[in-house]
Length: 315
Image 1 (spheres, helix red, strand yellow):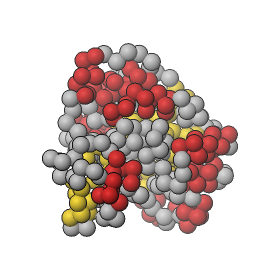
Image 2: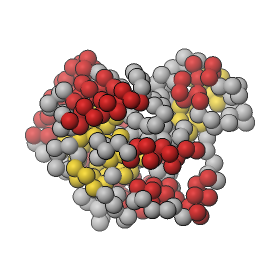
Image 3: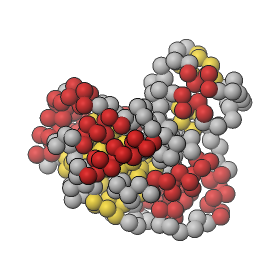
């Protein structure tokens, strides 16, 4: 496994980061024992980096996976807090949840621009204090916005940026793939540590998995790439791919046979833009939320490109 330093933090991470949203109660809802087993399979093969968030509600999976032989695993979490007291409580919750007295990285979730970072500055100050006390090793933001990346790059107090990036630009809220990669390059030149998210476009690029992963691995400014995994087959596929090895045909066949479904997050605002994009007529608005008819859905993922809130995923 290849390891790289996250910016100037001295935190060494595996190029493949275990994205834990997919196994959490929000998506696959694996039992804790099953989630632990999937994470373990990655850690045993050299992955040393796990990405989570308070909203994922899956700290218990990570705690069980790292409590014995993998205590030094790098863990990154995030929260939507905007007050000093709120973010400090979130850090404390993360520490209790993963069973350690420090967490490696803590991010403000989904920052959009210099204005949102400024508006959440009280929370930034809370994270600075946590870093000074040793509860957090590095702080930063996650973002779906090009302007978020650029703003964090120009903020000396922030160490880490976790941007959305994939070959099709799915989920980028304010520009193109080229503009996002330019922003990532700018941030890296400013000394920031970067690790990418949504390389498979929230599952919408699964059919193009090889091309999507080749693209993301070509972005050298990213120290690591968080990829969502919910089975050991997916772990083994990704580890082989990241190592440049041929993926066994048996694993490829099993992954191809997985029963996928269109998943619409609870924060859907029922704007209806996805309905316009769906030529199969599989979507409708029911009780203030987009709803899918699985008998009509083709799993093409076109609807996700129209969603301004990035709440449509294939899992």
